[in-house]
Image 1: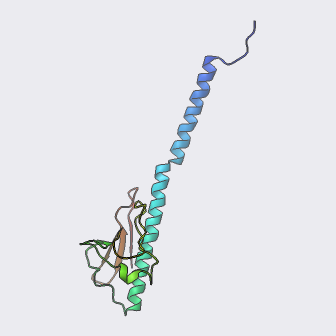
Image 2: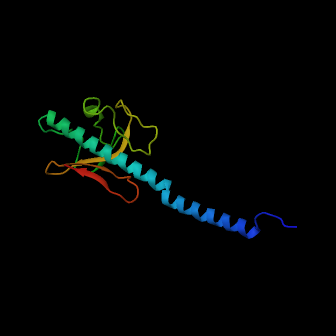
Image 3: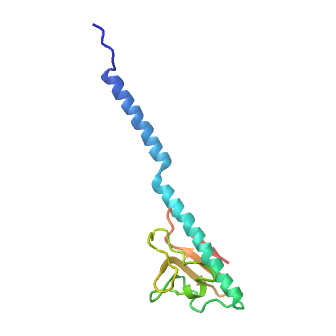
Length: 145
């Protein structure tokens, strides 16, 4: 009697090969890293938008920045101790205040209660810096002009 089929060794070998290939694909794709990279791209865009809007405000006001901006890098937001510049920028220069992408519910079209997660400061030479201190993957996201 001649039975046709797979041996246990053949089945185990196929399972091992599939497991190795699946491991390689998971490592190559690495969804957590891709999400972090997407978040950092959004942070970079937000930092540039905040810097551009603040500079446009200054241009329209004879080079004067909002007085709330100091030499100490401080988060932009409406709570006590934060730099509240929303009313200067929204809606004239920005449609809404950008927020860190990890804050999923954040859409700040009014200036009553917001926290962007981004820092802003101005140095003695008048150069404005906007930064994203919560950047992922050990990246530094900061723009100075």
